[in-house]
Length: 106
Length: 397
Image (cartoon, rainbow over all chains, first blue to last red; front, side, top):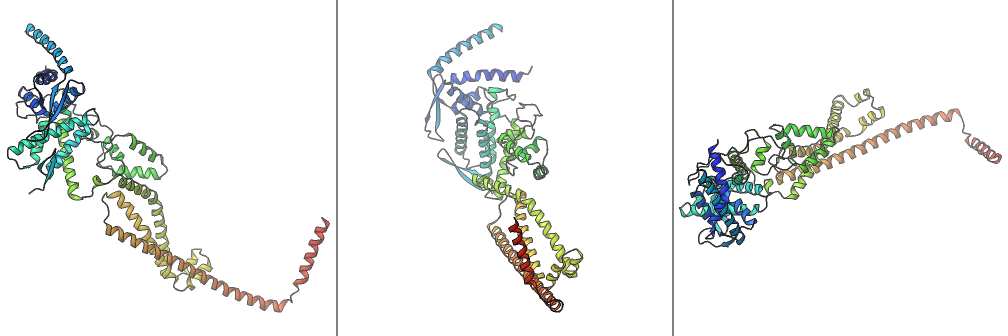
């Protein structure tokens, strides 16, 4: 069994959910999300995030607004839309179920 | 010492080495080409560009004054290439030894080592549309020159359909735009490492052409390309007639040289008309006139041939000085050739007429001499009889 592959598949499956979790309580800009995902070892290259954010935005989960930054270029601050919040609640339920199953199996 | 330029990223200026800039530009171009196929692709590239600006900004705060090529390479590794970026959506990245530092230098072997070649048009090595160099890559060849010659030969020796096939392929076959396309075109495995190398190679090449000639094809507008294509087509059409005329002219000069050395009368032994030979001998200065006309005609033919051959071999434009010199020389040669041809023709005609006249006078004198002796003229009567018979004939009808 390819352990690394299995691990990365697990992380990949969670990535979308985790990004949404990060945005649940506060608006974040891409660099914030990147550093936190990196801390959690969820992404390998930073670029992975951008197609994901674009897709979530297209699906109506997120929206963003531009904010000027005192240092560096203007930033996109992402927030969950109402629809996104509803979906997130759905995903929460699914996650709990999964976690329950896993701990039961353990 | 390196040349440094400053770039404007979202309103802030950053100093960056020229080679680093080339690399960054091709990295972003490659990404743009990759994502252009998908919806929201431009936004993704725009986000990446913002990220690059952010990282530049971080570097500046760390006290880095000028961004060099190593910084750009580090950023490229950090953000990843388009394939890695979308790996999460399609396939699994295998290297996952991630600490917070970027340890992603190991490539993700996402596809098998021998990917099948794909047919693309190679725009980095093209005469018209890069079709032939693409086909050459497809069959594993390295130098498309031979292929080009074969196709042009086929085109001119009765297989005009080759031209139509070429045009269709030009329309149908996609161009190799991204680094990945180029790798697939050459049948190389497509993985992150290879893509990075290809991007680097592209950057190095761009730098090279930038250093060599400023007005590279990059700055050529659409009109220039159309004009260039038109020139090539005209060249192709004119090439064979020009060559064959040149051959004929060389043969003519050979005969001329032979006649000049051995004298005009030798031509009579080749079956030339005696009157002609006589005229050539007698016309004043006609030998010089024909020589000048023939040599000037050689120049008139050789200059366009030279231009056409150069058009095929080299992609660089000619200097204005060369062009003017060529045009002036050509016009002078053309005028000289035409003038000398006309002069010699007039000369020939006049001499021929003189000879004819002389001979005619001789004959007339001879006739006059003989007629005076032999018979007195009695033509009028014969005429009337002839008239009478026709009258009778018509009356009878």
